[in-house]
Image 1: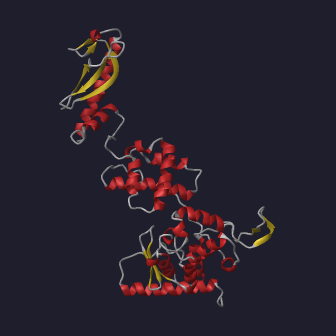
Image 2 (image 1 turned 180 degrees about the vertical axis):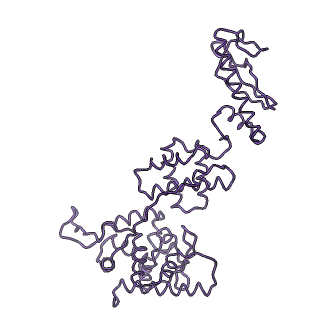
Image 3 (image 1 turned 180 degrees about the horizontal axis):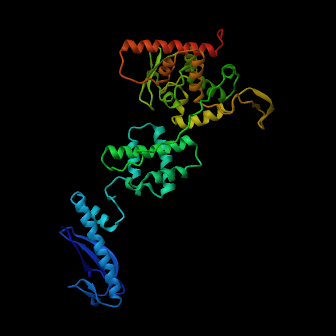
Length: 403
């Protein structure tokens, strides 16, 4: 069994001529632990390993307690099988910090684990994780020094409470970032601690933002000027393409069009989409024909997130003119809906489809929500035909066409 003893380290004296007393961990580990006690050479008995000067009894009592604690920790590490598995730095850490159940040196921190879970993830997921880390650091100080063994269900509750200024689903997203890190650690045998075993993340249903069909028709036929025309047209293009995500739309190139269909793999899910280009969509594609990218606005602007921010701001203001004018003489607009944004195109398409009694399975297939085993090409074509018919029906509904 490894044993420990005391020594006076006479290599480097302090300015007052005293030297540090150290605990020497035996059996060739070459580990020396600080005791925080310093004595002069003539106040140390190298045979008995005891202090002999003024206040020696008190100092010896402290040294005996420290030596006993280290000896007990060594025994525990050997008893539970950790001693032979730990590296020298880890052993030293465990003997120095007796509150630790497991070493942290050489063990990924929570920050490291979160980074591991982001490999190959979409940019949106990475952005959420980045903002989650900022709030995590605000709560705990430094996530690079936070480890799985330190986190308990109570700790998670306290962290969740610290996020009280955020929306419920944002808080849930931040907690899920942490849970993914733990799932990674458990899957890779980094920890056995699982504080999320019985922990339920609180969420609330996201309210779908749907533009009433009368207002959608108003938007289609609205006479617009300047940049509002471009943003309205792009919003309608998304609608005609069954709510395509702007990040995916911005990456499309002329090669994305195959036999009259737009084909792409959605960045968020990796799912392959194939959407028939209806005449209304084709007119917009022709109007904003790009060179490198399918649409000209993405030739000049490669940051889709920034572009969407500007687009959403414009959509929230777009509407018919009123009698009042701005300082530059341009008429003010009455917004069709002050909360209108890009995602309303997708939600509105789904709502109109349901109003037209299009089967839920077809709506799910159109939105890319279908799951299950791989299917045959015939079945895929059958589903595509149904989705194509559904999209045409929804577009006709919005454009009036007898509805």
